[in-house]
Each structure stands twice: as C-alpha cells, then as structure tokens.
Image (cartoon, rainbow, N blue to C red; front, side):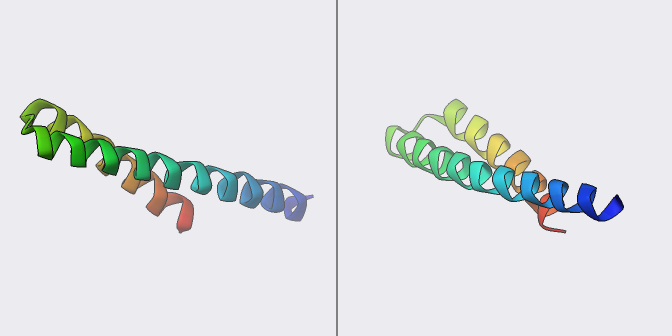
Length: 62
C-alpha cells in the first residue's frame, strides 16, 4: 500500500514540476518586460514569485 501511495505522490509531483516550469517561464518573460519598461514594482513582484516557485521546485525535486 505504501508503494502505491509513493508512486501516486511521485506522479503528482512530476505533473506539478511541469506546471512550475511553465510558470517560471512566464514569470521570466514578465520580468524581462518589466526590466525593459523599467517598472520597479513589477520587477519586485516577479522576483518574489520566482523565489516562491524556486522553493516549491526544490521541495518537489528532493
């Protein structure tokens, strides 16, 4: 039973990692636009979102 649960968790984690990678790509594109526009508020928001995504990614990959 534990093995089945571990396999399901692993599959869910793999799916979430794929979604996180897409979110990171989007945030990087948004950050690039903010840099070009010299929008400090948007840059700060993007950096914070990227940091949260990075932390989640590290937890899932461990």
